[in-house]
Amino acid sequence: MKANSALFTPYEKFVIAILALLQFTVVLDFMVLSPLGAILMPKMGISTSQFGLVVSAYAISAGCSGLLAAGFADRFDRKKMLLFFYTGFVLGTLSCGIVGSYTFLLCARVITGVFGGVIGSISFAIIADTFPMQVRGRVMGFVQMAFAASQVLGIPVGLYLATAFDWHAPFLMIVGVAIPVGLVVLFKLKPVTAHLEARVDKNAFLHLWHTASNSFYFQGFLSTILLATGGFMLMPFSSAFLVNNVQIPETRLSFIFFVTGLCAIFTGPYLGKLSDRLGKYRLFVFGSLLSMVMVLVYTHLGPSPMWEIVLVNSVLWIGISSRMISSSALTSGVPEMKDRGAYMGINSSIQQVSGGIASFVAGLIVYQPAKSAPLQHFDTIGYLTMATMLITMFMMYFIDRRVTAKLAVAAL
Image (cartoon, rainbow, N blue to C red; front, side, top):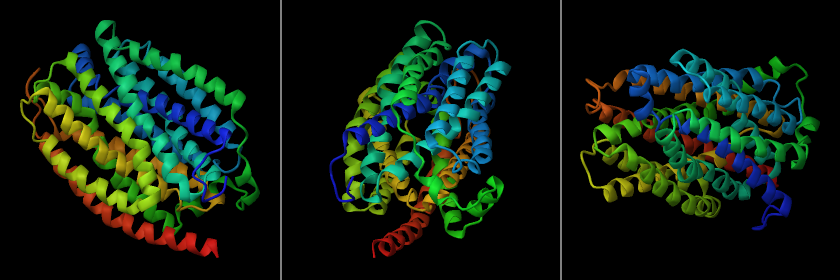
């Protein structure tokens, strides 16, 4: 595909679609646990800190495995790497669908995280290998629709299955969707091997060290830490906050997630085009400022009508989507091709570990005095999230300048 082309070939459209479906199943596996919190905590008789540990167990294990796999990420066909980790992810999710105790659920989340946490980094490396920077915002806009689709299709259905049957049902549903997706990748996705010709380091651990110690790459890693912190603090307790503080019935949570996700699905591709047309950093600034305002509003909500909650959630998600799409596209331009797999692996690892720590810390800040009582100190998490967004906005400015300069030199 030409760098200035607005059209994708049929195969490129297939790559975008299959990677979006992969992301959908992986993201859904993580995201479905958060809205299940209002059901799972009283069902298992666990505290907010214990639930926060279940959420963070996935993220921390994903971070550790991503770091261990990063040194090998540029040594193999990316398709083979993708299939290996996706198979492990499906088996881990199946384990979540059959466990019967808190301890075993915790172990199952660790297994799922070990494999699932690497899939995103491999997918983004494939995107960066396949599509030029000029259209990467548009590609990220479609792939990041997986987050919205998981709300529109997955989370409402998951919540319905959890309330109609049992909390295990959503995980079994994910397995049912993931198996056909994995088979399509096996038979239809072409090998991705261009990076093997550019590989310099023969030793995997030496390659990991060279990537991790690069000063420019380090700026990207640092921004990722702050990008992950805010979202992972708010997400795990959002459903419990809506039920106990805003007094939304559990049966209406599905509707809120459905409308919010539907809004994000329609705005995602448009935001991706805007990031390519207006500039990725400009869209990131817009998304950050909008998100900060809406986080302040959201975390101070009291009992409110349904239309107000839907509106606040929808606008907040537009801000978050703007940040996710633009930052993913921008940071994909940080590494060289020979380091791309390792960089994405380390970046994903840092994101998962930072998010896991943030979820656990949030569980220590927020507490519930009694069953069905309002959550306390949820606004504190909002202030911390806003602070990370403000700092990240300034950090991404310097990354944008470096990436722009690098692309200008490459174009000469």
